[in-house]
Image (spheres, rainbow, N blue to C red):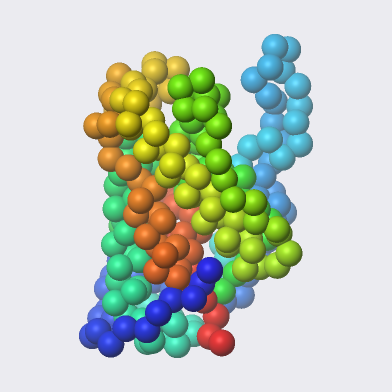
Length: 239
């Protein structure tokens, strides 16, 4: 994870859609860096569950630089200078993934905010980079569990920052497999999904958002999350 190649393409040109986050990080005030908040379960009667939901203030990233300034130049330029083609590919893949999540209620946004280095404070609980797309996890692992069966996954020992990124990538890969199975079986999105642009459509006809997400990981970069105004990507710290 976070080991991009080198490319000899043209240097990155200025792009108003590309910004960089200053490197100082602060914990989200709502979840205090945990990435999740408590809430009532859907049981009858409902019960309180600690860390039941992804924090809606910081999205899927447990620690965010919410209070650090956005820059139009990278504070650490080395990763971007060494692999300009890879950076451009990661950005386009990220925008493609978010566009493909539009039927699931994820806002269309093309601004990319880069951050150098971690952290992912703990394994991310959200399936995809926006809380509204959590409906996909319910479909894959609850509503369609009989049709899809068990979706295998790779266990990643969580013993450091790199392994947290690896766990995130493995989770996206597992979701990508679930999507392909649902598309192969032409499953229809039920009304219970409560996403008007997706309900009633066959999964075979909906655009797959996970293939471009996995392309970002394969290029050596990390997809952190998407918020209402930006896509957040991570580049590695220089060796």
